[in-house]
Length: 246
Image (cartoon, rainbow, N blue to C red; front, side, top):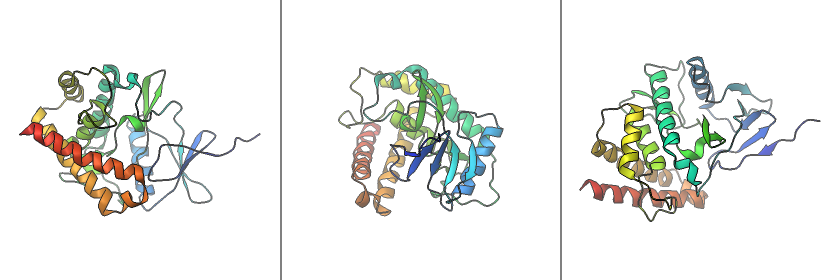
């Protein structure tokens, strides 16, 4: 007996469902570009990204289903392990290295590229887009907003969400004794960058201000209370981190 299609929770921008070993999601003008990108990444040995599988008869995008658990907020304590932080930074570096010099033959990105366009950024490389099995990171999903940009643009958001570098009163901040300095150093060392902490913090501030502006300018906050709350937290966290920079 065929398994029924069922919605997948967590996506705030696109309707997503699972049918057997496939993930089906609403397609857009960007979908062929993302399918080619995923094919390229898998050809480069990044087997932790979904396999692109074309389109369904009703025009939705089809991807392989990565089996495991995708955590949601409040994130479980084990998501903040040093092992996960280290692997996520190394995987982000592999993504960037695999796309340095990559060009799509007919690019249609869902979000505008950022300069300098050094690599292809995932643009949402965060724990809530990571797949875990037995508390071990095994995959990364939600590639719709990938687009060209600088390496630090991606690394900054990972630092914000995974270290995490947010104000203590942010509802998403973990209630854990975390040595932020050592975790930030571990992130930078694992990725392998010469960027300094102040440089990364400056990019995080810019990244969060851009996210807040993007949410409001595209009317997303009016349609989704969760996105409105996120935009407010981005602005408050940007101000908090800017204060640390002096």
